[in-house]
Image 1 (cartoon, rainbow, N blue to C red):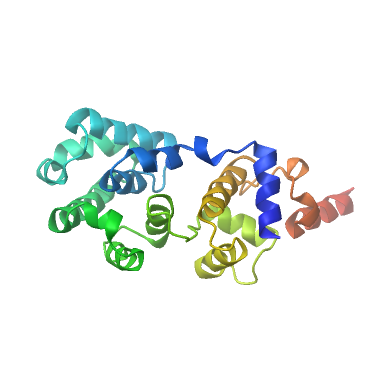
Image 2 (image 1 turned 180 degrees about the vertical axis):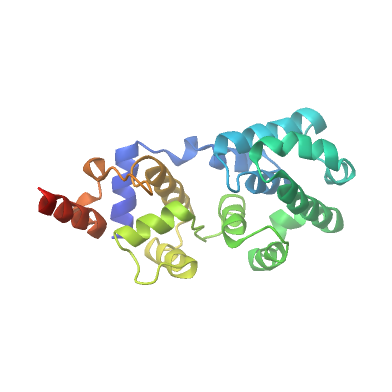
Length: 228
């Protein structure tokens, strides 16, 4: 069922994983830079996160140097202000920078993913979704990041009885057979669908390619018919 859902959404949105910004950037950036971009994307749009990241690059050059990030807090904050929650984000970036200075960037690309997950999750400001995005897109590790859009769609169809991070993530990993590229595709196309069609307040059920299998859409249709 999961694979069918993702294939429907891919066709509907004409989605191509290799054209997705995070897929491209995960191969162009250093692992440290990618982690910074992931932090900047928290609670803001991809557009504003990328603008904040580009500000950092314009000011400090590439590759980003963790020592310069630590030594110039005011300038970094000025660069990332546009992404919102900038002081909190800077503190998270500072902690990541200290880790990279201690261990070197190569550990992010070479250390066992389970070890990296535990270390990154110990950093205040890095949650499971952020860490799983890094592991999936940078390390090509078969995990599945769950955000609010994915949680909402999973609840509305529904795909799981208990709509929590573990239940949703493990379902997709299992049903997609640890297929990394399919997990990437599923993560991104579901987010796109949640932003454009399966919205929180005004879902566009009449345009949804999943309407025939969605309990939420069916209940809305029944309610509308009763009103008529």
